[in-house]
Each structure stands twice: as structure tokens, then as C-alpha cells.
Length: 129
Image (tube, rainbow, N blue to C red):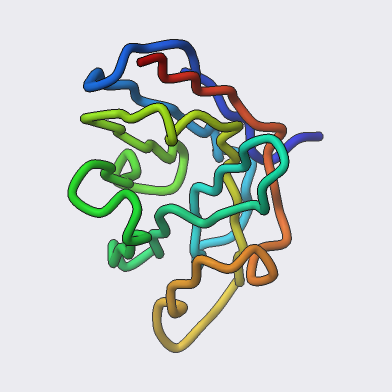
């Protein structure tokens, strides 16, 4: 039973916009950090944005000011709005999560893949010049 399912990838021209979604309705934890990662052929997986249950967000320098991570108000759906896309944004985009049943406070945000133990299958984004 997949807990994270991505959708919304596709092809767009340079400067265009795209929103990818992650169905996280089966992710069972109330305290969480969720993130979007991407991986281009021959490159390492890169964290681009993260959000926790408190609504705090962080972004990698490569996407800051162009991408926006958000949820639907809870954790059922995770979004990544991508604006002003560039060819170097082309990659497979993955949704990832790590959760806890109870914490004293929202977990700190991380963009390293080792901090996430639940992954989706990915959705492809292609940006043409």
C-alpha cells in the first residue's frame, strides 16, 4: 500500500509553470516533515523544498523564489508550485516524508534524503528551451 503518490508532472517550456502533487492521505502520522526531491539522470538526488506540520518551509538555493511548497491545510496533499522553470529543473520529482505519532514540537526541516523514510514513485518534469 503506497503511502505517497505523486502526480502532475509533464512538459513545459522555459519560463513556464507547473504544479506537482503528492497524495499523502494514507500517511498516518500527525507530526511530520515532508519534502520534494528531484533527481536528474547521472546526478544525485537533491532536496528542493521541505515543510513540517507547523507550516514552516525551507528551500534549496537553486529554487528559492521560484518554487513554493504547501499542503492542503493538513497533510492529505502536498504540492510543489514551480514557476519560471528552467531546463536545469528537468528531473524526476519525488515526494518524501518522515513522521511521528507524538512530538513536543514540529520536527526540524531537512533537505537531505537520509532524513526521510517514506518515498513516492516519482513524477517526471521536463523543461524545454
